[in-house]
Length: 248
Length: 250
Image (tube, rainbow over all chains, first blue to last red; front, top):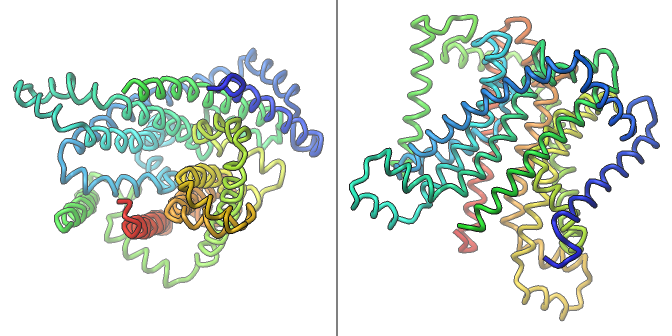
């Protein structure tokens, strides 16, 4: 790193640049369809103090939390199971990649019909977004482990669970963590997306409801909060991710 | 190779058979999901009736439009950024965080700004696709050997000609990867937006059929979208592999 170009400086310049662009866009478009950064921040402050907002936030966060837990558990299980078996890994990896690229929102009506309108459909939808990246990264991490480590484990006659705990997991952790980071983001996107299509609670619902009411303040504030939350968490996870890869 | 194919066919076949058994056995009721053979029949019927051709054409038109815009703009921006180190470093945090941001959350804002129509949908597809193209282009340009750049300088090529005649052709496999990603993202963006709020298009039709309990339309359309995206993805992946193999990269 040369002094002037540290990541922190880049991030600050970038954020400042985005705010300037936002302000310029506001000056160009006007009050009809946009709010200025300052107005948005002020309204967001008000929104965070209102009783109306918190139940929606809590609802989204609850759905997101459960979905993330499911995505991580199932994704890791699939990744380890397939990664340890050469033929399964070879056959299933392209299929998982194909699944990764489909617009999963088209599956949402099926989930709604299966689970009914409400929390469980949202959770399921968030989870299917997160499972595939976690599984894919885990699969390739496990497959990429140096054979000598596995041989050592076999020589020590480790049980399958001890093998996973003491050898596979530590060796694969950096790449698995990348999967967890991507899975986190996609689960959040999935949860909010589900709420935008059909829900009666949550941030996605607030957004869609605001279109009907032509409430630009709410649209700008909720979008702003979602973006800040998603990028802040991703920033932290990315920093951990890079450190893990650096160490490895 | 053949064992892998067999495995894949087995997994898909087993899954379809399982669904069929569950549907026929009544574990999954008819309102939730018709049995797969019924979906296949409806699928053929839907195509023969030609009722949804205009919707399919409209969605695919928007997908292609946002793909082309994102692809061309992405390669241009990637090439420019590669020459400007400071700008690239400054934008790096954005690229690293970009796909964590729920881009669909901007859709309501775009509807308010541009009205409910093709514009916001194409814009969402474009925004989802472009960063993948930029990042992949940068990635490819990073791997251009110095000797090629020197050759271009000796031949007195300008920056534009260097890009068109030397560096970008070298990056062809990366540009193909970029195309694959961009197409998938454009597809997700357009179909997803239609789903959330629109007046027509495949995504809209699925949402409409869902609200009307019209499973005979909904399931074939979902199947169509899945098949389209899987075909696009595997077709381009196959081509990508051929290209990489020819270059001896894989």
